[in-house]
Length: 64
Image (cartoon, rainbow, N blue to C red; front, side, top):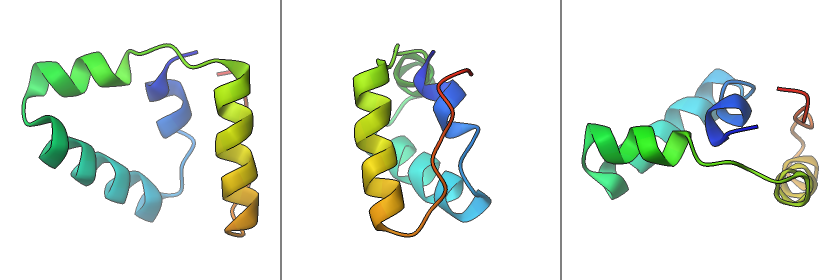
C-alpha cells in the first residue's frame, strides 16, 4: 500500500489540506509523485488511524 492509497481515502477537506501542504513543502511535481508512491506499513497506518480517531475521523483501510 502506498501513501497515495491512503490519501485517496481521506475526506475532501483533509485531502486538500494534505495535498496543498505537501506541494508547498515538496515543491516539485516529481517530488510529490515520489512522496505519494512511498510504501506505508500496517504499523504506520495504525498510527494514522489512532490520530484520526482521536480527532473524530473515520479509520482508513489497509486493503487499498
